[in-house]
Structures are given as C-alpha cells and as structure tokens.
Length: 358
Length: 161
Picture 1 (cartoon, helix red, strand yellow):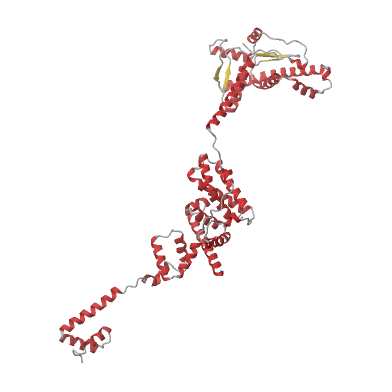
Picture 2 (tube, chains in turn blue, brown):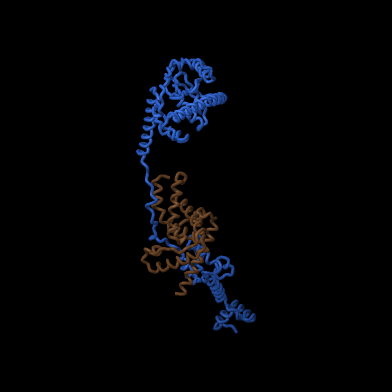
C-alpha cells in the first residue's frame, strides 16, 4: 500500500524500472491523489536523465570506434611517423597522430627512433683540394694589351714587307757560283711586252680598265665582286698560266742543278744532295721568293709570254691573300689592277731577277 | 656565370659535394676526383649554367659521377679516419653517428643518395627528383624505405646494447 510514508521508495523503484505494472498503476493513482508530489516526481525524473546525457561525454570516442582503423593503425603508423619527422604531415593528420600517441604511448618510442634516422652532415669533412679549384680573373687591361701587341707585330711585318717590296732588288746567285751577269729588264720593256701581249688575261685586264673608265696610270687598286661565271673563266685562265709558269720554274731549277753539276765541288753530291745543298745556299730573300713563287704558280695571274719570266707584285700578293680569304669565307672578291704596276721576275739558266712595277 | 660566381660556388658547395660523394662511395680519393671533375665541367659550361642553379647542376653532376664510379669500380672501404672525426661534443650523438654510418652503408645506392640529399642538403622532394631523375613519388618511397631500414638498424643495435 502506497502512502505518504513510503511513496519515495516507490518513485525510486519506478525510475530504476523495478516496479511491476500493477505497482506502477498504484503509484500513478497515488500521485493523482497528491498533485504536489506528482509535479516533483516529473521534475526530478526528467532533470536527472538530461544532466547525465550532457555531462558524460567520452573525449576520445572516435578512437574506440571500429572504423578508426582506416586512418591510423599498426600498418600505416610508420607513414605517419616518417611524415611527422619529414614535416610534411598536414595539421589535421598531425593532431590525429598526437591523439593516437596518447592512446598508444608505445608509438612514442617508435617516433623517437625515426627521429634518430635524420642524418646530420659532418662538417669536419672538408674538400681538401679547394684551392686548386679557384679560377683567376683575367684583367681586361692585359687582354687588350695582348691584342695591341699582336696588332703592332702585324703592322710591323706589313711595313717591313712593304719596304722590302718597294725596292728593286736583284737576287744575285753568287752562292750558287753563277757566272753570267743578271739581265735587268727595264720597265719600258716590260710595259711594251705587256701591251703587245695577246694573252686572255691581258685582254681581260685591258677591258676591265676600259669598263671602269679609269686611267691606266691610276695608282689605286679596286676591289670588285665578280660573278661566278667570271670567276670560273678566270680560274681557267689561271690554270693555263700556272702551267706555263710551272714549266718555266722547272727550267730554272734544272738550270740551277746543271750549274751545280758543272761545278767541280759539287760532283761528289748526288742529285738529291744537290737540291738540298742548293736550298742550304739560298739566302732568306731567296727562300722567301721561292716560297712565294711556288704559291704564285698555282694562283696568280700573269700576262707574261716570255720564257722563264714570272711576275710578282704587291697586288699579286694581295690577290693571293684575297684568294685565301675567298677560299675560307666563300666570297668572290677579286682585286683588279687599274695600273700596270706589276713587277717582274726573270729567270734563265744562270740567274733570276725580281723587280717591282711602277 | 662569372669567375667570381664560380669561385663562390667552390667556397659554398665543394665541401657538401665532397661529403655527399664520400658517403656514397666510401672512397676518399675517388670522391676528391669526382668533385674536381664536377667543377671542371662547371667551368667548361659556365656560360650555359645559371648562377642560381649552380648547386643543383653540381649535385646532379656529382650524383651521376657517383653512379658511374660505383658501377665501374668495385667498392672499397677506404674511409679515412677524418670521416669519423665529428666536431660534436655530444657523446651520444657521436655514437649514433657511427651507427648511422654503418646503417647508411647498408642502404641501396639510390636510397642512400636521396636520404643524403634530403638530410645533408635539405633538398625538397621535387629538387631531389630533378637531381636523380626520379619522380617525386619515387623519391618519397625511397626516403620512406631508407628511414625504415635505418630505424630498424638502430632498434636492433639498441636492443643488443
């Protein structure tokens, strides 16, 4: 029987779910008879349930759920730990790893081991040959100095060559024991010979002068760009002339050798030795001339029709130079003389002579 | 790059390159040659190398020379004593350094190279990829494997101690 003395026990049993349905009905009937008690009953029962739900929150509930294994587990914990020491974990993953370590403290030891795998450079190890690697800067002053020196040398050589070429000189082959006097050809004779010449090159030169309407006594040379056809024609002319010159040079050399053979002192030499001996006897001028001659016979133009006659002049040398430049650069530049200023080199059985032109 | 920039590169990078080569090859003389040759190549190509990318150029060159060296020559342990003369006064680190050296020597060449570039020079994954010709993902994988191997080696040794 529920009365004012024991109704609280019935209410507690009701909240604990221990009352039978008959006892619940009796309790509710009692509360209907006592409205003040009924109000307290409902207030107490609701308040208790709500307070418990709100205050009792488990802070790491997610870690206990089964689906947590998808984020950090024993299989992927190394990735998280390495990511942490590599500093490439995002903030969210970093926090997650920290929470994981709270629940699994043994992971902290793993993290410490991974921290130790970070290598530190041993600064005591130095490259021992560093000094040998340094490079020195080349001063511009010295650089330009070198260029200036080279330019001066080139100018000096050019000036000396110019002086050398200006003077008529006679190569006396005294060292070759030649006896006959040197035949000096006068400039008038050379001019006459060239004017009377019927060689194709002579004609070319004359026509060139006419086309340019310039006096033959004009002391300036002119550089013109000629066509490929003209160049080919010139090449043919050159080759014909070069053949003539080569035969003339051969004659000169044979003559010189014969002189040697006629010399009693030279009888003890064979042919090869004579040639060597001859070379030994050549003066620097003669050697220079011989070298130019060999080049000239392949390249330069001449209008000479005389036997043993070789023309050489400053313009020929310039022509040689231009030929070389054309060969290297692929240009078609040619020097055409507007002046008949060629020098001449004559050779016969005994001597040869080089003279400059006008 | 100018002569001045080249000489600055010698000052700044030759030691690091030498350590990198030495740790990879374990050959003192060979490492000297490698560094010298790398700088010779840099000097020859100085007109084409941007001064901002000198370090990357040098490490790339040295890396390839290390590969050539290790594939051509038989590996010899010629580490000089200086290699282990640490400047650190931390005795625990000194011990760890030796352990790591030993562990490092057991790594495959590529793992060793990438982890040295990462830890010694602080290169990012993509920079290491540029030097070694690997993708960024490959670099990450090699570094991961290297760290796991090093960690296991340390754990084993500490357990023994």
